[in-house]
Length: 62
Image (cartoon, rainbow, N blue to C red; front, side, top):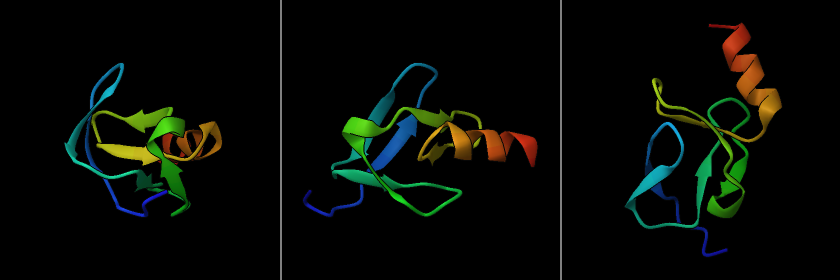
C-alpha cells in the first residue's frame, strides 16, 4: 500500500477516482479501506464504510 488517501466520487454501482490513491477512510470506524476491498458506501452522503457492519450502523443511526 502506498498509504496515499484517494478522493472518490461514489456512484450507485461503482466509484470514480477523483484523486489517485490506494485507500479511503471509513466514515464510521476510521479504518483504512484499500480500494480493492471497498464494497460499501453511501451515494447520497458520499461516505465509504469498512464493512456491512458500519454501513448498517450508519443506516440505523440516520
